[in-house]
Amino acid sequence: METHSCETLHVVAGSYDGHLVGYQGAPPSSELSPAFAFGAHAGCVRHLAVAGPHLVSASTDNTVGVHHLRKKRTYGNLTQEDGGRAVNCVAFFATTHLLVGTDDGDISVWRTTDWECLLRMKQHRAPVNHLSIHPSGKLALSVAADSKLML
Image (cartoon, rainbow, N blue to C red):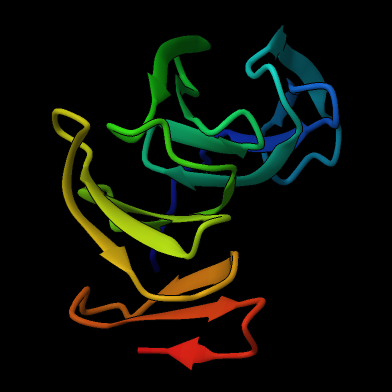
């Protein structure tokens, strides 16, 4: 017989005015209690992703917010060297790398140990709407408003 430890369940929502609100609970209970609420961005929160203890939030203020779920603390915001454009989507590969898709069609790869931008690619001619990473980490798909799916 296998036994599994119950982990805390987190439910996080982003708002149009840049706030993040989090609730937590322990399965199998369906009750959630407030965990945090704070202003994370100067613009609209467009997308959220979680890997391990990290929560990242994509925003129209051209930044990716980096937060620690367990410590309920914000580390800061990631920005491109040139300021970039609105960030539409974020996706983790395991807990080691983060992919970010922006309004100008760029996809960037960030290392999560030191939050350094390793690579920035101009893949699309329109805003990137979604990213999906293969479990091996060797491939990723991007979908954009230019009606293209790129590998």
